[in-house]
Amino acid sequence: MEDLNFNRRFVLKALLAGPAASFIASSKALAASVSCSDQIVRVAGLAAPDSMNPFATWTSFWPTTFTYDFLVGIDAQRHSDRLGFAKEWSVDDDLTWTFTMWPGMKWSDGKPATAKDVAFTYEYLKNSIGTPDELNVGWNNTAGLEQVESIEAVDETTLRIITKSPTRWPVDNTIMIVPEHIWSSVSYADARSTFRNDPPLVGTGPMIVSEFQQGQFARLTPNAYFRAGQPKIAGLIFSFFPSADSIAQGLKSGNLNYGMNLTAAQWSDLSNDEAIVVGEGLTEARNYLAFNTASGQGEGSTRALQDKAFRDAIGYAIDQKAIVERAFRGHADPGMGLVTPSASGYYSELQDIKRHFDLEEAARRLDAAGYKDSDGDGVREDKDGNGFQLELITGTSSGTIETPMAAVQLVAGWLGQIGIPVSVTQLDPGALDARTASPDQGGGKWDLLICGSWLTPSAPDLLVLGKPDHTSNNSYWQNSEFDQLISEVERTADIKKSQALVDKAARIIYQEAPYIMLAYPFMLDARRKDCFQGWGTEDMFSMWSYFPLDRLKAI
Image (tube, rainbow, N blue to C red; front, side, top):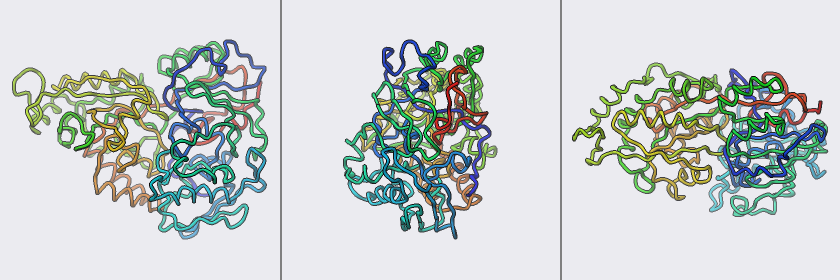
């Protein structure tokens, strides 16, 4: 197997990630009094899945990742005991990839799970490219499949993928493999919109989603046909909470076995509880300030947002170290470029072009760019002579780590000091997704945005914030040179070449400044010691697999 060339300094200790939905305290997902006797693992996080259909939404990654396997994916390349649908894989001439499936593997309904299901999943996506209902709106999407020449199920256990040019997509993609006998009757129109994929799901992972109550919980049961043997636990209840307060309270009371997305204060408090183990680790999460760079449809309140010089000047008014120390209480790395420190093979501190925090320098650059306070009222005017009053929207999108409001307040305060007052609008996940959607989907008409993103450490995912028409490109920024570099990154399997391309792209977007990175937050989590064992050591959790739900045991 090929080695994964983007190692973390720490492996993320987490089971789930994402933002909020309403929590009902009386939900049967979290009973008032929970004992260890039922052997059901209770976990919680800030998550808000709106359906269990991976083709229609990004928010369902948790908990569907425990039900659906990737063919290979990120985690299997790091850990030989966390393999997905494929048991082995190899590549010839960087173009022909051969995958061997687990012999005798079955879906959770007892039907054979074979290479034909993998070929179906990929072809299902690939054949939608260019159609009015292209499957490009959810976790399972068409990105990268345009590079594939052919996909063939050679036999029940062998899959061959031939690519048009060198690419790591066949092993790095995180498409969830679905059963052909379920999905072959679902039209593209339904798959990307109305089909909810209601439980019970049919998968090959260790835990099968058997019940889903939107905004409350997902219940999972052990897969009797899991290739490594049925998990020893009796089940899993995954509660979706609107804030970390409920998570911390549940851990203290014993109503939860595991919780994540904790705040620094909660994490510190829980660390003093002898019944609880706390952990933290690097993630691929990025918290940033984004500028609405759109022109025309969806544009912000001033054309200054479209001006590189204006955005660059504001970059000097942001103190990332202060944000880490005061807002994250040290549980983050200071923001720099697109690449997170966890993607160590690609990370650079960009020292030769790095901005430094200096409010006077920010003010000088704004003056030089033509944004002056001509009437002395403390508020600058744009080039049309209008005073600034920018709307800054913020919130937590599904699949990300919550940005502390203290960070938002710091940024608003610094901008006010250089003559750019802002009003802050805090939004729930659904409203935030609607406001930050592409302008042709009704989004836009805001000025500044503080939120986060969290995708894999693969080279293409590191650059998606600047990819045209990608749902993660919240600034609506476009740059032809950057687009070309993304295209080249997607067409190379050579790690050194990929590193050089990513570095060049990261420098372009840093200097163009559609985003100012604020921090790379750590995941703060905690678990109780009393009910279950087998959580693992320092690397007990990884963002990109079912581990350790396949091997937990009751104490």
